[in-house]
Image 1 (cartoon, rainbow, N blue to C red):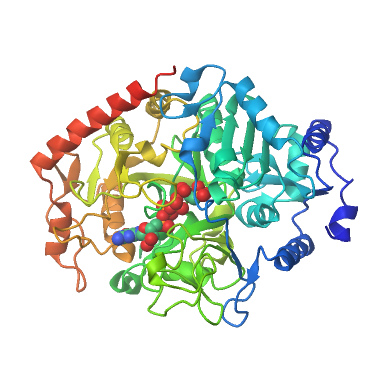
Image 2 (image 1 turned 135 degrees about the vertical axis):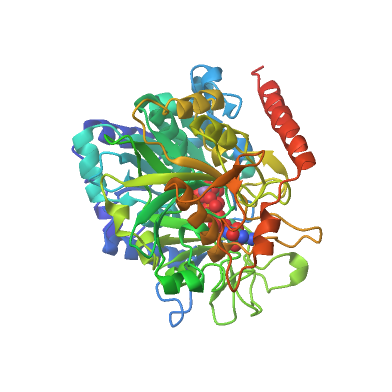
Length: 578
Ligand code: GTP
Ligand code: SPV
Ligand code: MN
């Protein structure tokens, strides 16, 4: 451990509860040194240098990718582990059928046994962070203790990390406690435990984003959803984007798609040429998490609690997401991507170059599978996105005009439909499904119910969660309209029926027109749908493509409805505690 970091170890905090907790954890985990993170550039540089020296970060080509690094994770530690993720409430019914549950005493005992002495030979980092603009009443703070410098430098990008957060925590006196250790990175000794009644997280044995950057899914979704229900707001797995039309009106839309199903891409959408020329603009507020609550005007006001993006690399290209590609050209941490011979990051779908090394550092051989891991990711500051919205820093958030649910569905689900009212919209969100992806370990491509894209992230019983959603429909509420989209429908040959990406703006335009009452819709089974010509065609978009993507087949829908009922029944049955 280097001298500068070590000499700061005894500083700490004026908040007795925090100082005591750090001391207690240090006594348990027995690190060689304790370092309180201030979030400064100098501190960050030191950490990067230390990791370069021990090989856990590899500098990328400074000419093409200045300030960029590659991290190769343990090959068994590349995604979230839903089967090892628990919600530990006093009553098992509070965690619900949708979560794995363990009694808090048992979970603490199990975790504390793992944590005993686990930081010997390592530095314990104390990472104070704020989820949301530091001056926002909607923001919430936490402290993560970790023995992973990779986690620290990622948390610095993903959250408002360091001294300003510590000052807010000292003023408020309360904070989420997150304890993390890499442990042995053994999948057999890996658990992600949540104690919502204690505002505590314990995570052991993984360095992967969603398992280890505790501000993100563990705090900002699982614990925050619990707090949100108690306090009358919503913590959702949603992107937030602003759409500015040629008249200068901006509408903010929040959209929930499951992991690796298009949030980052939609949030950074580049309008098709005809729209750009007419003056349409897209503003990115968030790509993964949305906290929203009713304002005095009855509207839902939303903030993005994060300060950076932990995005899926594969599929990102100049064609699919030019804003993202620009954004990750500098000061970016790449995890599990491939490398070209001149040390540029590479992944499937980027371009037609052939990489030199795969994500494990082996000479690239297609026989070993994809060059980049399918869940390879980039970590980057939100401000580097060309479409970054300055409203991301608004303490009060942005007003939401529409909520969009969507999934990855090869069949059945049309391009877009609108819920008839709030209650129907909650039903649409509650029954949605999507094909599983590489964002979580397990089989990819299975259709599973993923209500509101929150199956892996809701910190309490889904029945209570749906009831909480319904409770927002009060007199005086100015609730957003709710829609469902599907960018992933395929034809018989397995080709996408809809070009997606920038072209998705055509669907968002219809959504805004519906919100403003500017266009008619027809009732078509699943919900309200565009009338002919309702979605704008153009030189690069034929009316026939739109019609095909909008088709609804009665037989498919009967099967879908039967599956919705069956899946839910099964989920309830299998999850009854023993
Ligand atoms: P998480 O960060 O895991 O929560 O995922 P996300 O919802 O932000 O997913 P992301 O936008 O990173 O998309 C994941 C994959 O879907 C990428 O490979 C994209 O290229 C692909 N994708 C995104 N939008 C579209 C689309 O409109 N059409 C098609 N065909 N693919 C898309
Ligand atoms: C997801 O899996 O939904 C992600 C990536 O956004 S992680 O933060 O690792 O959960
Ligand atoms: Mn996500």
